[in-house]
Amino acid sequence: RTRLQSAQKHSMFARRPVLGFLRSGHLRALSTQRPASIKAPPMVYITGEEMTRYTMSLVLKQWIQPNIDVSAWEFYDLSCVSRDNTEDAVLREAVEAGRRIGSIFKEPTVTPTEIQKEKLGLKKAWGSPNGAMRRGWNGITISRDTIHIEGMTLGFQKPVLFERHAIGGEYGAGWKVVGRGEVTTTFKPRDGGPDVIVDERVLDDDASAVVTYHNPLDNVVDLAHHFFTRCLDAKVVPYVVTKKTVFKWQEGFWVRMKDVFEHYYKDKFKAAGLLDGCGGELQHLISDAATMQIIRWTGGGFGMAAHNYDGDMLTDEVAQVHRSPGFITSNLIGKHEDGRFIQEYEASHGTVADMWHAHLRGEETSLNPLGMVEALIGAMQYSARLNEGHEEIVEFTNKLRGYIHKAMVAGKGTRDLCGEKGLTTEQFVDYIEAMIKGETPAPELPKSEPVHPEIDTQAVDLAAMRRMFDDLDVDGNGTIDFEEFSDGLARLGVQPSKYGFKFTHPVE
Picture 1 (cartoon, one colour):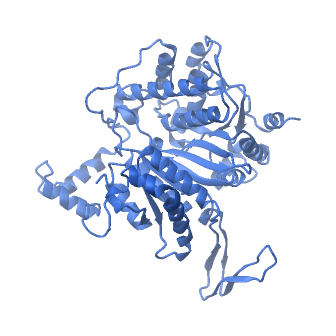
Picture 2 (cartoon, rainbow, N blue to C red; picture 1 turned 45 degrees about the vertical axis):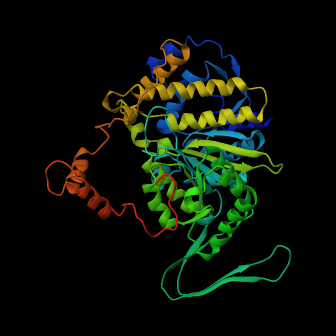
Picture 3 (cartoon, rainbow, N blue to C red; picture 1 turned 180 degrees about the vertical axis):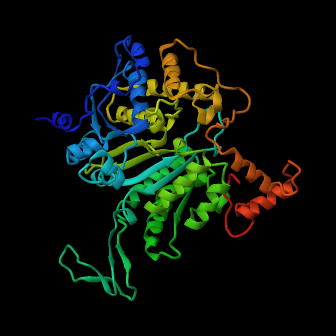
């Protein structure tokens, strides 16, 4: 039995048509598909559930499969029910396929709560698949970058790149709640050397949560090379973020990052002028300071690398400044034993459960698929890089990205960008499909200033927005002057500061 046959047996979605998610109104359009003309190289496609699964089923059927022969792709269903039915064999086989093939696209998945476990009739509340993937693919870093729409201004003006150490920290912690007593943490060397006492402490409380975790350092060198190469290519200023002033064990991360920078990249960054605004040196940011700078540096043009937990929190903040998690990429970079890089691409948002429930009630929805499609484009292009002779894949996906951007700028996007006149989930997919087919001409991008997204008044709490405005409008005259604006920023704690840092980011 081949690996693919085994995967098909375990996965109730593997190789299964996705028409079940389509509304009857879309069947007519699909029945007239022309044969796909571009052969795609092998790639792993992991399906999820809820609103994002439904939307990507439309994207596959209307944008991809009529143009791309995906017969070499391997599909794995990581929905809760599929994982439960296979005792998680489908996850293990998806991880193995990812190691073998090297390029993976993953839709958002659900990590079930106890309530969802009961509702779905699951044997157990299965854990997040992400840990198994990071371990199975020797995860190095999770790259999360801002997505920019040509011709439209979102949050950051220039790209922001982020590297989050993919392993270690609280996510793999062991823990127990214990009473009064003593705790000793002991390291036992594998080479048979003497035991090492890592920590000893006395617990005097009736209840304490004792937590143990570690941070691997071997792959920080690979992370550093990946980070600095990307920053140099994107022409952004690099920063390393830790809390090493308090958490002394984080010093090793900074030292390894700085050593790689000094030996391989410093001269290149200086020659590119990317260190002119920060003293000609690689700068370290305390994580507390990084939270403030992300809010202030809205010009973008910077990159940050951090530990696992700090990276998780700070990239959420980047997403908030840049409008939403739908405009942030999330790419896991791993490494095969033979040195080949394994890359998994996904959106940084979840399954959009509230919109899914609205869809099930028969209500209109307007889900922006940009984050997921960017991830799919990334996976398709990386698979083309791994397998020579697939330039047509890169050409098609670049055109697809361009069509999406032009539609959004022209007011033919979803409502999160185009306000109340924006298209529904299905209408947007139909519109892009018509452009791909040549039935609808692609709009021209504006030649003047970039457009700004419109407010979807149905999704925004206008009453809360009014209260915020009134809070800044101290004299109540209906306008906010510079003094009121300055006072408001000071009260929020986000006012630009002259002091407290030894450097100024070049975009300030």
